[in-house]
Image (cartoon, rainbow, N blue to C red; front, side, top):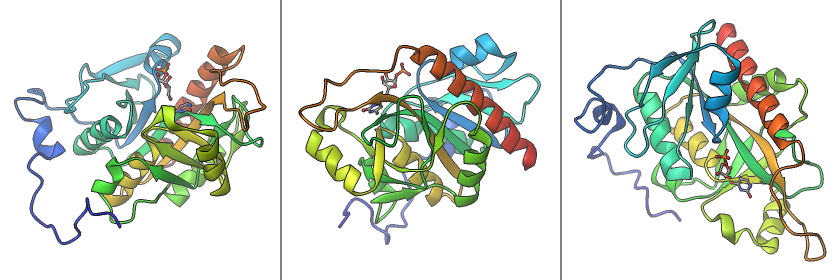
Length: 264
Ligand SMILES: O=P(O)(O)O[C@H]1O[C@H](CO)[C@@H](O)[C@H]1O
Ligand SMILES: O=c1cc[nH]c(=O)[nH]1
């Protein structure tokens, strides 16, 4: 059983995100965020956003403990903010905790995943009901962090809102800490659990949101198809038109998040 989380430990965390954001290491300027936030776990998203939409800067540098990404909103739809989470579960959760400390009430996670199931192709969007955890961060937040669950209602609405050009698929996924230890056997085991894809942040983000009772759901664009056996070809990234697919995906996430925020 998990020994990193002690449910009887009611002593206070030495550093909290709430305290950190206004500390000397955080920000001198008060920042308030809109209630809905999109946490991109991919590199191109904020550049694409500023290229293709009219945006405004909410904060040049979010006062996270590790990284300091900018936080943006659309000029015409200021009720949603967009930022980039750190890569890997610990850095991603640092960004998330900061967003929550600054007032976010609902979180949409938008990232990439590698896929290892014939039912899913590069360019599909996987929106999981639950994510199996092989990362350590969520084990500091919950006694049983084996699976992290999306908020059922938000997950259903996100699937609906994302159904545009790209295929949306409702399969479970897994989050790992060790990208270079995704062996063929390991991925066969993940398949046996019903998982179709792997990323490095999403289970921790969903688990932390669940612990704080903040509705969250994750959409993962399949960015690379993994070989399923020794006889299949080598791993490779993306597809011939992956840049266009990724752009389409970012647009769908933007539209879906605005739609979901308008419904609130
Ligand atoms: O920063 P971009 O190109 O989105 O890629 C990031 O996302 C991938 C993992 O999801 C890794 O390749 C990482 O570098
Ligand atoms: O985290 C990731 C993202 C894409 N592909 C993978 O195998 N892992």
